[in-house]
Every structure is written in C-alpha cells, then in structure tokens.
Amino acid sequence: MPWYVKLEEGIVSKDRFDAVVPAHLAWLAELGREGHHPRSGYWADRKGCTGDGAGGMLLFRADDWAQADRLVRSDPLIQAGCVRWSLHEWSLVHGSL
Image (cartoon, rainbow, N blue to C red; front, side, top):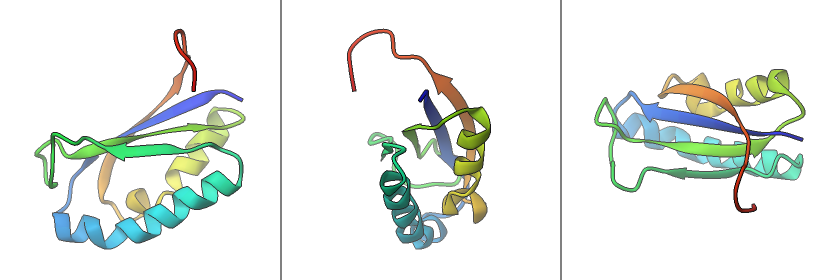
C-alpha cells in the first residue's frame, strides 16, 4: 500500500478554521480505524490562516491514487473550503515509519 502526502495551506480566518478542526480530528481517527495509518500535523512556525503560510501535512496510506484522492476530498477542512491543498504519492527512500 503506497504512502501519500496531502499538503495544505489555510485560506480562511483562524476562527473559521478552528471551528472545523474537531470534525477533521474525527475524520483522522476514522482513517486510522480503516487502516490508512494517518500522521498529521501543522507547520509549527506558521500560526493562523488567511495567506500567512499556516497549514500542515497529512501522511497516509491508500490502495491507489483514486482512493487517496477520494479520502482527501472527504476531509472536513477541504469540504468546508478552509484549505488550499495538493496531493502527492510519496516514495520513502531512507529511514522507516
């Protein structure tokens, strides 16, 4: 099962973003229960939203690109229009997870 990375940048006010975080965390927990091994976090050097570079990254496993894309599009942060995002298949070349 390949690894995928979702990179995201917050594009709404911090208040609006923070209102969706509980649903986002529940979504991550569901990904974990489904065996996708999510690892998620935010850029610690960038706090806030609306174009200041705030955002984060999600590393997860999926069967293929189509499944990865479906999973990412079901993220409440994306559905609520809170982030600009990109998806990448990631190949580990050094170390382990």
